[in-house]
Length: 357
Image (cartoon, rainbow, N blue to C red; front, top):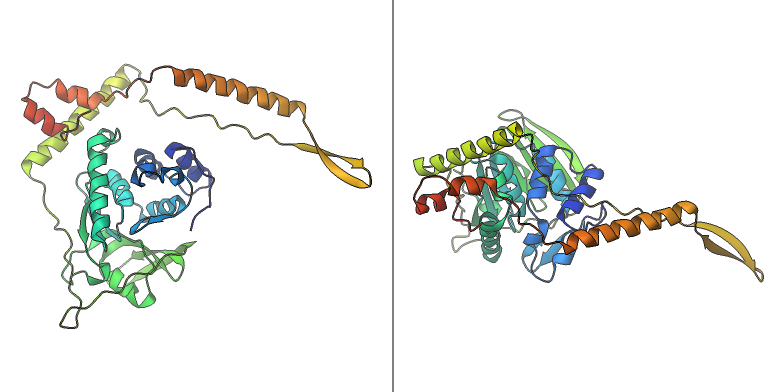
């Protein structure tokens, strides 16, 4: 499934294409997509395919097409502080984007059938927290993943504001999924080859809307134990943050707000990553000539084509000159403020989440 938009050269280029095709429609979703580089979730040697609008699978590791994730993120209507459950959380790519919107007081849980994929997701999450430049620009709700079949969730599990299922749901499992949802919540899942948004409007009332025609592998049926019944799976607890963690959140928030106010007072705009100009595609005008008894099309360059070629050459030369200059490392103002605080080094390390940059 995928191929709805053109391939991008990098993550920003892919997001531009998804916006242009109206798969990404809100600023909040766009910011989350730009903050998480899809290529970081691919295995080495496969990254060349990361910015195509195609699904990717290698062993148990799987990523849906970018257009699918875009529609899912928009349909979930995420807001800070909500609880989210990802059924079939896979690499953690979607859960990490969701965490950027939920913020530190949300709940972000995932359940995944394959233990090796959960380990992969945890590695990618740790890499994002430790190395990504985006981490300090957002308040983050860290995902918690468990191994298990999402059709075996314990009956006494808590309910969620938002749920996504990343595998095809059979009609007889639809009500099972709905029970996991709070009143007022939104569930997005593929049913009968349709990505469907379901809103729980009351204790026993629902509203459904088809979003997009899709093709998903079906949910794996649970295996049974020696008693002939499937074992139940416990979801992560909804833990309350401790005082130390709350202090870190509010200190970082205060410093981030101070930096924003300082920049506004100085008239310094917050820098967005530079966008490359898209090359204009040369359109050929054909004329036809007779060769013997055959009418043969001959390309004919127009003056506009020649000007386009010249503009593209100038743009390439400019980009080559910029690439030759040594690139300045991105400035992390939040980290700089933390490191200047009159605190022991151990506390500074805690405030920076023990990041090295």
